[in-house]
Length: 268
Length: 92
Ligand SMILES: [Zn+2]
Image 1 (cartoon, each protein chain N blue to C red):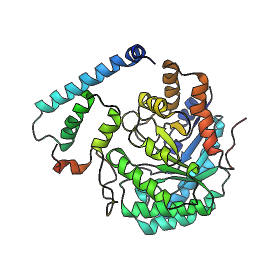
Image 2: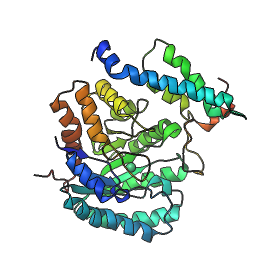
Image 3: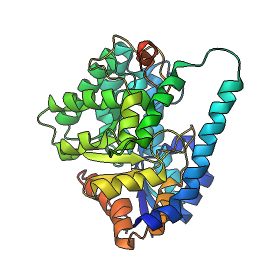
Image 4: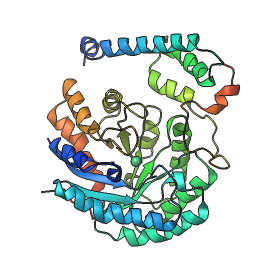
């Protein structure tokens, strides 16, 4: 069965991973802009990174039969320096014109600070002005609950942003309802220790249904597994879920959300 | 799934995780020094496992979360440690 990996940081992965993803049935990967594990020293560092995810990665992915799309932003971990953030924000509109860019993401909060929140608002304004989809990163561990609430309240201050054009990612049991109740989509991230295990992710699908949820591996340079989505598909089969259910969650749902961008096309 | 199916798929895994937790707490007991505040939070979560109310997972995650509503003045560290640092001063 073919599936979409809607959140993967392929710049951190080897070409072998593309090959294994393709063998496992992945036909589309989406790469949100994120933190490199260290702070970039200038706006030029971001420029080169945006080039990489909009030009180099699509080419690398296509060699392995995978369509590659990107999201552009300044990630919240680097939002503390407001002058650098604004310099990077001013570069974003040009990248939104690229043929494989789906929207603004992954924006959000990390430690729930005032500056992170200010930069989040500026991204939302940009998304509204350029009619872009929004992909939101919610904070880690003990910061997630509070951060999710701050994020949802901030989004509400941008009434021109349609809730169904915003996906709140990395939801867990204590935040999924908050996101869905506001009319947003929610992403469940499958991580070996933090975020959700495969079993818990399917529990969330059992409880909250299939309407506006997707699964992703969010594989990056940290502890993560690029094949987490096919692992979840296998677990759904073990629990007796139908093939139709599995493809709803791993193909049709991401396709529904992403197709709100005119740049997204399902592979033939 | 019925309860028998859940048992077949997940009992051995749950048993193994419970024993790992017990072994970790034994290891902590044998170790010198003060226990980090996060262990106290973890112990405070254990009664949730034994009550008869639903949503145990969400309630444990809530217990470990920062309950304050306002943004912080500035982000210092980028990482999270697993339990809200304010739990240090909190009485269980
Ligand atoms: Zn990510």
